Length: 415
Image 1 (cartoon, helix red, strand yellow):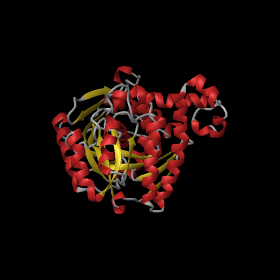
Image 2 (image 1 turned 60 degrees about the vertical axis):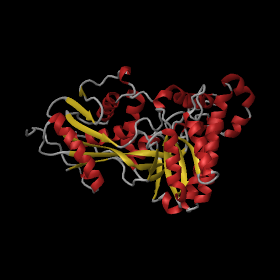
Image 3 (image 1 turned 90 degrees about the vertical axis):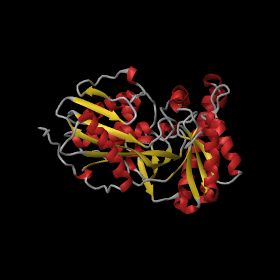
Image 4 (image 1 turned 30 degrees about the vertical axis):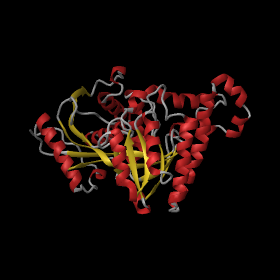
């Protein structure tokens, strides 16, 4: 079928080399596309990596600092225009769906779903001046869903790059795209995340991010491979989707921002911690202890992010690991996003068992939003195989995965 509409080829979509591994995944996506939608003359490839939060646990939404790394797992897909007003999405292992480009109203029934994400990205790009048209897309994924690697941000970024390539509109920088993805995540997916997930996915590489100005975050990148310094980056899926704890996750920024509001501010980055110290007794009575503890974590963790970035830039892995252990302790004691109510303690158990194997070596901490999802470990290379086998015995096959930093962020490219 020859389509009447042929989207323009924008320059930023022609710069990416496709590795043999990625090529094979795109072939899978193409087969799914043709099975679902039929063949086309030309195809658009899209790619968006998962991400790991390296430093900065719950600091981004308070205007703080974060270190994040794009990973060598990704959402990959094949797309093409369909000359209709429908966006049709097929995803490997999931039921396909479609929406019309004119249906842009938010629907809370679509929270925590790919339909919600798709509609949110549609609205986000329309708001940025794009003219929407129908297209088909087939997606495959190596990003574990609900495991704390931000599969939702990867889907958002992949869809965003596809829409950008297929529709008339401006080119989007990584920051522009990340802001569009955050809008979709917050408003249409129903998760009150900060910008770190989306910006890491869109930028790629190992990156430092300063969110004091949320509309124009400051960033820096570092070419860094942890294994060059003797440690593997391992993430352990604790066997509990963090979506189950969305309400507990959402309470973290709410409580932090209640503290900020007492000082007439919106976020903790705007509050002087010395002024906080002068009002502890009053604030305890008004807000309760946990809100104060979470504010204490923010200031402590934000300082640790800066120190860890300095350690990385100076190739001081020992200092980085020491500071990472301090960060893990702060999340457990002050932020309190490791334990959940009752006897079900998947993240805390994973951390305890991992510490048992590491026996003081390397470092470990809660990863991302916390409560469920995953935990992060920096494991000495000489024990990484034993470590992985033990954790998989306890948490299931492939629960513990070894990752590498991926330099490429989200992109789209005509094949």
